[in-house]
Image 1: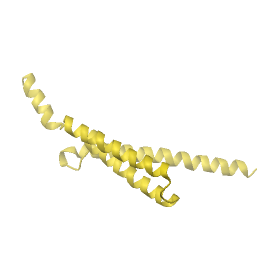
Image 2: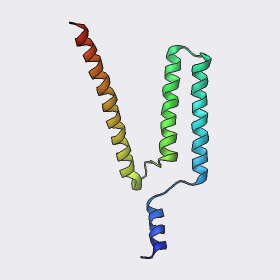
Image 3: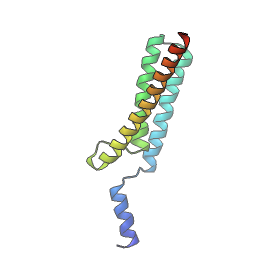
Image 4: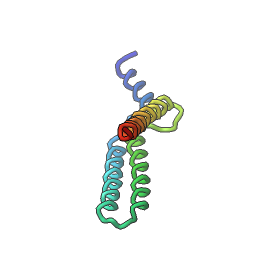
Length: 113
């Protein structure tokens, strides 16, 4: 296999983004960030509505980042990438919520003395 064939084989197997997808991802990320910033700064929504809006915007931001920059998709050829990404999210959630659980219990039991 020549070097050119190896590069073509690599490009077929790993679909990297092009400049347009990176620019679209960057613009969408900036727009979502500015919207979230405006919602918080303007105090135009109630506290509950602000939390819900920020949760929705954060979810959209995750979708934009993972699809346009990390190239995670539901295609069968990208299944390993998706499983790795979901496992990483799971580990991060276990660490965050485990830490919160431990800190809550430490505070609860230390204050009871």
